[in-house]
Amino acid sequence: MQLSPGKALYSNIVSKKKYIIVFLIIAIVISFIVNLFVGSAGLTLVETINAIFGDSSKINRVIVWSIRMPVAISAILVGAALGIGGCEMQTILNNPMASPYTLGISSAASFGAALVIILRISISPFFDNILISLSAFCFSILASFSIFTLSKRFGWDRGVLILFGIAMSFLFNALTTFLQFIADQNDLQSFIFWSFGDLTKINWTQILILFIVLIVIYTLFFKKSWHLTAVTLGDSAALSLGIDVKKMRRTVIIMVAILSATSVSFAGTIGFVGIVAPHIARMIGGEDQRFLLSISALVGALMLSVASTFGKTLVPGVILPIGLVTSMVGIPFFIYLILQHRGGMK
Figure 1: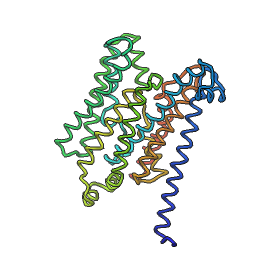
Figure 2 (figure 1 turned 90 degrees about the horizontal axis):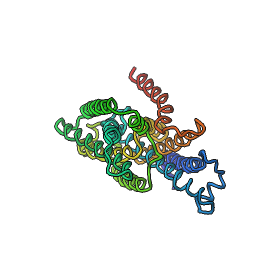
Figure 3 (figure 1 turned 60 degrees about the vertical axis):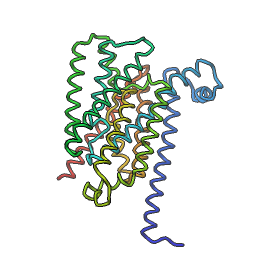
Figure 4 (figure 1 turned 90 degrees about the vertical axis):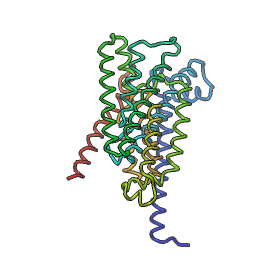
């Protein structure tokens, strides 16, 4: 049976998007292997593969499984989380410059981490990293809940949400600056390194937590993909299709807050991935949330995986903070987006 021209065109578009997803998955797998292979220990590709499957010396297995593997996996998971968060924030706020950090989540997390690091709040040395992550997570959720409560009184207006997010960022940035002012040199150095974004201290427990949160929230978003696609048409159009826009906005903000708070509390602040990945996804996959969500996650994962590899190779013998690498790549693209947006307004 021959398809009608319209159905044939739709089938071709869907097939192309599926090919894009497959291509991105293959690229991520290759990037993951390269990330495991690259490092100062000088392991060959064969030695790396043997260490993965346990057919190698103990020191090689430790290097691969205890040092490189957690970083490589967390780069993919954190990148996917930021890609998803940025995609849905841009969708629900109808703002191309929105990101997972629009609600002040990164600023709140930085303050939470600074509080523990600079004031030297400690239960025992074993729990120091856990306490930093927990404090960052709690303050991220606190910031989100504050915006949630305030925005509820203004009917979940998009502009109000963004303004409250900016205000929250300024508040926590000011508090963090004060802590930096009173900090000694060693504590200040530790906090600054954390704020650059760091995957090297993420452990297997944190990877499992992030994986579970990522899968659950991705699934919930995917089930609402039709509703989210309708929201891109505007509030009036979405309401005419029977979608409760305010409820949808609330739900998305809560889920993005949880996802972003989890990733930031473990990895620190990693800029531009949450803005750039969704834009690249739209360029190659369009606005259909069934595909945009997955492509944004995959592009974010690929970006951070590649950035993790570059961070180990740009300066020999030094691992650059991953947030620094993403910023170096993201800033030119961000300027390009601003110029494109300005051109569109003209």
